Length: 552
Image: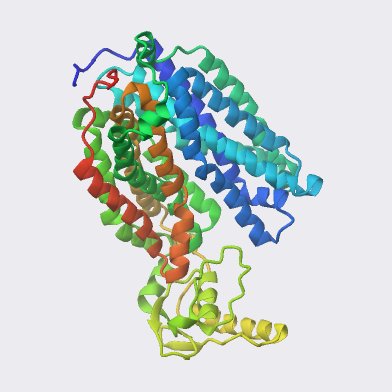
């Protein structure tokens, strides 16, 4: 039932609620992203018993573990939040997150305690993921239930800025420490400092949150004796609520998540891996786009109070589906024009017997390919070169055609180690020479990177992120009744963002590795965003005018 819009200005208490909730969530994201930003160093410190390639992959898998367990944190802490209150539950989550991060800073490495080091590290990452699974829902519900009618989108949109701000904070602290002490000392022990100083952030967050009051919606429900005794069974055991949870996942958060991760993470990965822009330049350009784009979280959150949440979120998904391919093509031309020109003028084609070609996803570099097709594709993938596939008759030796030049591959099966090594070096040199002759650059020329255009393109991608993400907290809160709100909204949010979104870089990389086309990884976010666009448009109702104090 709709209620009148409250046009009174924000009170001191409401400002404090938004500030405290946002600040704590920024710190949680800071803790969470520290690990990702330092994955290469952590790989050497905690997975040194493995070869370098496998160590880095295991470090990234430990990072992914934090995403995978987020929905379980949503269940655990969502249940507590609906039973004992919002305030104390997300006070617990920040303590778990902060202490886990602090302990990582003190944890002995592999050289000191052997295999126990990575085991404890992964356990701490899982604790962080569980805590984050409870934190976001608590913060969003807490702010929404303190917000006046007609301003929930504006108030909760501040929570939506926290992931970006937390990422900024982590990069800022790392850069400061790294610069102050030098690369060698930082890689040896200085990397621990950003983790250890998080204890100060924890102390500030706990102090602020202890001074906050319980949300008025929960207080009213508790006073009326209407709190849920079994929020999990109410949320997921009753079809009328489970139906909304499922719709919230596939009709809202799945598409929101892939657009979010495409704009803030995959774009950076694409710049450095596919377009070969140097890391510092790519990071700076992404940072510029985030600075320009972050205010739009609040702009679209506020706009959603006037025109509705659903039109803005669905428009963001639609624009992603329609524009991702041309936008990323334009990004190639702006960031690495030599590569774009070479691809247009001299296409690379692999002609091979399809039965000879196996799955090319080899993140650790430990799989030894022996067929002529696999060897050809592996060399091109290693050089980050896109190619088209053409089927050849059975038994045909694979060839790589670069423009008009054709290079036959070879079969390594049965060759001695020395012969295989020699053959590999000869083949790679032939391919490299022909790629160079065809104009394919080994890396992006810094002088030719159109930094203004790249920043504009990245800014556009971030604006799409703000469209789908700015209004989502308010909409999820409004979809569910107060008695099971924390539990019900947290699960679809964290499955969407933890699984659909968190696994996007890995999934997209696998698609590119298998198909050979550097743009084909975009099919994953396009298909998921398209699914959300269709289902959300047809089955999700607008929520901006609902009474969130209702319990039925």
